[in-house]
Structure formats: C-alpha cells, structure tokens
Image (cartoon, rainbow, N blue to C red):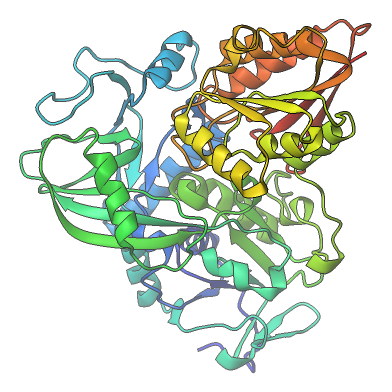
Length: 554
C-alpha cells in the first residue's frame, strides 16, 4: 500500500469507477502511470444501468453527434483494445431501425436530402417484421449504430483493476479528507499522497464543494428488462423509446427522463411510461423481468466537462457524459490524460475553466428575466387600457391573462389555439383572475384574418406569439412554419402605428429549427421604413436556446 510516508506519491487518484473513471484509468494505465481508483461501489450509478447506445446521429433532425469522426474512431480503437486485454467482448454493431411515430416526423425526413449526409442512412424495402412491429409510417435504418455492454465493460475492467491492486472500495469526502501541499494532495483517511485527484463522480459531482460552480441539470432515467418470446430482431429499434436485443429472448427498453425526481429508485410511473410507448409499436406480448434506475450526470449545454481546478491544480474533474457517455468517453478521457500528463491544451468546448465562472452566491446574482417576461414587459409598455390585443398561441394562458389585465375591462383580447386542452387551461386561469374580456377561439392563428372580420387593419395594440408545443401537453402537436408565417404577416397588418408584435421561437424540437429560421428571414425582409425590429436571446449559449423577435410598427 502507498502511504503518506512513501517517498514517491502516486501519479493520480481517480474518484469513481463509472464510464468516465474506468475509461480514464485505462488510458493512464497504458501510459505507465502509478495510480489508484477509489469507488463507492454504488450499484445505483447511471453507468451501471446504462444501455450503452452509440448512435452516429441524434435528435429528431438526425444531426451528426458532436465531433463524430474523432469520437467514433477513438471509441472503436479504445474498446477494441480493452476487449483484447480483458478477453471480454462487449462492443457490438447491431444497427438501429428508427420508426416514424407521426406524419410530421415522416414529412420532415422526406423533405431532406440525405445523399450528402456524413452518416449512412438507409430505407430498406422491408424495415421491420410486420408480425412483430406496428410501423404504418415506415422509418429508416442506421446500420453503423453500435452498443457497448456497459455493465460487462465495467465488470471486466474492475477485474483487472482488482487484480493489479489499483481499485479500492471506499468513500471520499472531498470537503474533509484532502490536505494540500505545494504540488501534491494527501488523502488523510486513506493514508495516500498523490500528484492528482481526478473526480469522476457522475451525478454525485453535484454535491462536490470543490467544483460547486459546475451547473448540473441531472436527469433520472429508468430502464426495463423484458423477456419477449418470438422476437428475432437483432437491431436496436427506436420509436419514442428504444428496444435493445441482449440475446436469448431478453431485451432492454427505455429510457425515461425525469429532471425533478433525482432519487435513484424505480417508479411505477416510469415503468408505465416505457410500457405505454412500447405498446405503440411492439405487437408481441412481453414479460418485465427487471427494472432499474440511475441518475445521468448532465451539465450545462449537455456536453462533457474536463479540466483543472482554478485554485488547486492538483485537482481535476471529468463529468457530464450524459446519455452519450459510451461514445464520448474515450475521446474526452484522452484529452484530459494528454492535458494532465502531457501538457496539451483542452478543447474550449470541454474546458471547465472556460465554461464555468466562479459561482456567485444565489442571493447576490443579478436575475436575468426570462424571454417570456421580457416579451410581456415590452408589450406592457405599448398597450393602453381599452385597446385590443391578440394572443396568437394561448397555450397555458399566461400571455392571455397578461393581455387581459393590460387592456383592462374596457378592452378586449382574442386568444387562438388549435388544442381544446390549451383553451381549457386558459379559461381556468382567466376565471381565477376574474377577467371576462377575452374571446377564446379554437382555430389556427393562420385563420386570424377570417376569424376576426370586425377587427380593422391598424387597430390592434399588440400580438403575442409563443411558438412550439404546449408545455405539459402532446409534444408532437406543434406550430407549423407555414401557418406561423401566415399568422405573423396578418398580425403585422393588424397592429396600429406604435403597436408591437412579439414572436418567441424555439429551435430544437421537431420542425422548430426550420420555423425559427423562416421567422428570422421574414423579419429581416421587413421594410425598415415601416418596422423597427430587434432580437433578444436567452442567457444560455445553446444552439437550441429560444429567441425573441420584436417588431414595432412605425
């Protein structure tokens, strides 16, 4: 055992033997460095229940995964080498069949030209077995999709680490168990001295006070293990949830995303959600033989984070792999290893020090109003008592109620939404605040001109749009580009001089990118002599962050 009295300190101590810690440990072992892994042996960690899907494209728009060429090559080389050294196969290439679940998703796919796409996408004549799957809208195939058997990878690695004495089952309190020297750290409870302590703690990293400025948005996921007699499918099948073949009639199915309940325990609601979605496309009966849950370590912008502590350069962090950890881990761990023990710079998209600033106590932070609040503030400065206003997307009724108060009892508001659920919610909110000056219309906002024949051109004070889907409703029902553009054009004709139109757009959901781009182009083309336009962006730098367009008629 290495103790604090040993002449030479360890090169590193890794805290956590999940996907991040295990992958980094292999890379440092291959560099010939002396180290130790300290692991709590927590059977509820997300790594130990992860499905290990390695998909070359992600999301409804099939965007290639981040740094795909580099991450894919690094993962292939790394896992093949570990397989060889452990004599344990755990990386397979089953391919993936993705089934369309809405006409909109099929139309979106058919509109795009896939000939120049960097990832092979096929549409075989017979995509899935009709006796096993219900796929009336068809789908497509990703033949290069892979799967890492994460539990097998972790177990095979663990056996090696135990055999060579580099794994210790224990806990580490980062607040009390570390004493810092000039260039080393003493782990007092463990009688260890090391040059580096690298925290690979997954979701537990959110409780580490040494890296308290890292902004986590963890998500609990649940997975079912199923026995499905008669299902011979060897590929991963995905339609809202994925179904992964594990051999001998056993399949994994999942997963859920819960950002509120972060306990690592299974729930009936999680089980029921997976079962309901499975029955949308799986015809065969199945038996649930296992149910697991884990908390994914997701950080700001959903990209992994690596780097060195600002005050104590002996400390480092590797976290935030999220649901793409199997694909990203080898590439990201390689960057960290080269930085810590080779001096190479860290990619700015991953670097802890460039992505997060020292955390200001919450009570001292200036609050940046949300874009919905900014829109209401701008509209409130324009609308006068007794005027007419329009909520083009009633949704949950927040803007409708705001406009009802802004125009007062003498004014009037018209609120549009195609979903009866949205209008019911809006009506309930209006009843709570006691306003009856609103007309609710279950019609598309594209029909605004025909629906409001008595509203004269140039007589409306404000029109508010909040595009996308109904929060808490059916996310497959969204505003559409053509109808939104038509409605905005009508709104611009209806507003008076000095009147305002606000349009909140949400890239990222199905059709959202195209809708946001199209709205932006429409507004850019407005004549500057007639309209003053501006754009406000969310505080986050994510490419899918919402944007607020503001148009004032001069």
